[in-house]
Length: 391
Figure 1 (cartoon, helix red, strand yellow):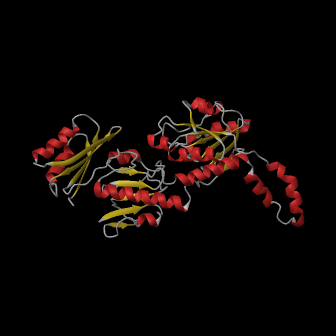
Figure 2 (cartoon, rainbow, N blue to C red; figure 1 turned 135 degrees about the vertical axis):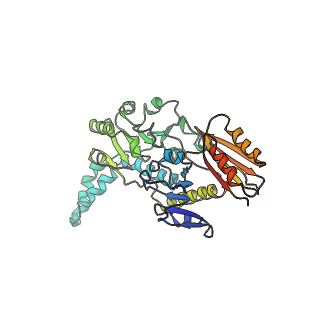
Figure 3 (cartoon, helix red, strand yellow; figure 1 turned 45 degrees about the horizontal axis):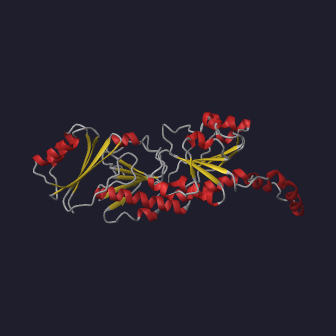
């Protein structure tokens, strides 16, 4: 029986995919096999020795101690694309909110309560203070052409915008989904040179912190509007404040308000609503559960942020899962241990991700003796060994 600890409320349509006769789900488990969460911060948690996988029902994983998990052989999953449509729709709304002073107009209308029959006259006289412009024919720069960025680019193009994207790491899958009418810039400099709006849709990592800074803002035209529905740390607060104060940036809309942002002029702050739709939460939960279920039961890995993708059809015998440092001579050492114990390999897959290698090995017996497992664990560079019994 697998034990799953949910550190946040997870959509039931997802949790129900765990077979009830094989899984227990409880937020109070102290020795779970898997953890499923959304925004819970795990950095101060003691990771139990029983833990094999962590699944984030969402794309961002900055709330999970990735390095610590990797050292312990814990596979960390996320759900890229599951909430993409929800975020895309909010980005499109953000374009409208930064173009027309809709938010300001709504707040002004609230002040008219109690003025009775005068309201219509006051509205007609005052609406000029909230005038804006249309997005049709304007240029949008999309930084990051992943699942969300591609949807944003295509949607903006469909409403009449000229769209230019930039992503040096764009996948073939994303490229095939990108509208042929969306231009792709060869560099960040050429992307930002003459755009009216800039939307950032990249993950927050150590090398992307403060991606929008004074140097990149200086590349933009005066009066640019910047949209951040990715992660707060991608924009340097001090630099965006200065640009807002001097008018270089006309508007900044962010889904990640903090104490500094809320004190800035010409900011529209949204309370982290990007993936806050029923559909997104359901999609993320379903994907997270399916990925964890597949890993715990068969060792297959999809959408891991710290382990390589690895999929192999299951044989009838036992399956050995091994994670090791990606250094020479590891496969031969592993197979030598099995050969010396007269264990025949029915199928084997070896994949690597950065300095991590992951092996799926199916053998010709239903069970693998403890002494063989112990020998595999003693190989220098091996840091995780799991054995799944034969089916």
